[in-house]
Length: 485
Picture 1 (cartoon, rainbow, N blue to C red):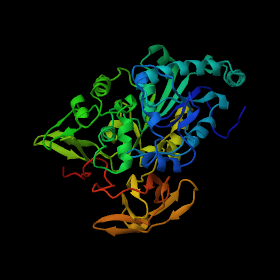
Picture 2: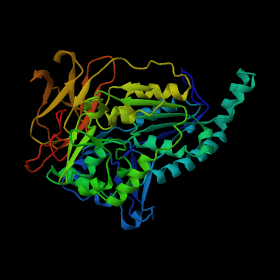
Picture 3: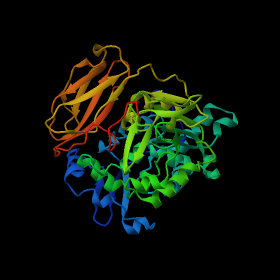
Picture 4: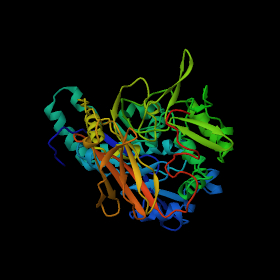
C-alpha cells in the first residue's frame, strides 16, 4: 500500500479527459492518429501534411459503425489544435489523484474517442465506471484498507463500501453528467469534479466549424476535420449567443449549414444541448476558468462568423453587452452549472487541469475534505495568438495587473522544454503587452507569472504560412471584436 502524508480515500477515482485529450490509434494499421510525442507533428499536420485525414469520420462511422479507431490512454504529451490552442497532458492531475487513494489501482483513466457523440461515450463511461468500482472492491489493497478503517472506527459508518469519484476536464464533464442520468450509476457516485466543462456549450465550436474560408491554412484544415466530428457539434452553445447588435437568439442548424457545417449533425446536437439532463452532477465541485479573453457571442452573415468577447443580457433599454470572461475557450457562465458554487481559477482552458490549484481542489474533493478557499486573488488574463508566422514577431497582451513590472513573460519550446525568450512587458496604447521575438516552426508555450500562484499559460503554433489577407490573430473568419460589435 502506498502511504502519503495527507488524507486518503478508499473510493474509486476515474479521470476523464477533455476533447482531444485521449490518444487515438487506428486498429487497422496500428498507427497513432492523435497524441504523438513529437510536437513537430502538429506543425506538419495543421499546415502541410495529410495526417488529419484518418481522423475524419468515415461513412461507416457516420452510420454508427464504430471501432476503427481505439482510444488507448490519456495524452502524455502536449497537443495542439487551432482555435482551441494547446492542451496540457494530465500527468500532474493523475499523479495528484493517485497520491490520495489507498492504492494506485483505485485511480483509473477513461480514454475515449472524442470524435464521436457524447451520448455514445457517456454510455461507455457508465460501463467502465461500474467495472472499475467492482475491480477496485475486489482488489487486495481495498480489503486491507477497509479492515484498517474499520479497526480505527468501531461504528457502522466506518464500514461503508467504497463509491466512485469522477474527475473530469472539459468535454469529460459532459460525459460524466450524461452518464449519471442513470440513477443506478448515480447512486454509486459520491462526488463529481469538473474542470472547465462547457455545460452550456462554447461559441468556439461554431468557429471551428466555420473557419474554412479566407483564413490561415491551419484553420482551414481544422474546419475540414471538425465538420465530420459529432463530438464537436455536441459542444455547440445552447444559450442565446447569436446577435445582430440589438437582440440575441439561439443557434440554429441553418446557421451551421450556412457556415459550411453539417445540418443533420447540428440539428441532432443542438436538440441534445437544449434538452439538458434533469439531474445535476452528483456532489458537484466545479472549477471555472476566468479572466482570459473569451469568445462569448457571434454575429453570422453571408457564410461568415464574427466573434465577440461579450455576451448579451436583457435590460430596461434592450440589451446590454457584458464581458463575463472565461478560460479562453469556455465562457465563465457556460462552465457554471446551477445551483452549485464554483471555484474560480485564472487559467486557460487547455491548462486548467494541469494547474497546481486545480489538482489541490480535486484532491480535497476526492478525500471529502473541501477545506477551501483554495485559491488566491490573481486576475491575470493572457491574450495570445493561436497561430503565428515563423520568423515574425508576435504580440502578447496581458491584463489583470497594474504595472508591466508586476509580471514576467516567458516563451518555452515545448519540444525541448527550453526557454527561448523572455520578452519584457511594457505599455502600448493603454495595454500591457510583451512582444515575442520571431520563432522557428514548432509548438511553444507562453507563460505569464505574477508570483504566488501557477503561471497562466497558453500554447501557440509557429509555422511557415503563405501570406494571406486574414489576420492570423483572430478567432473567426472576420476580426475579433472587443465589445463594440
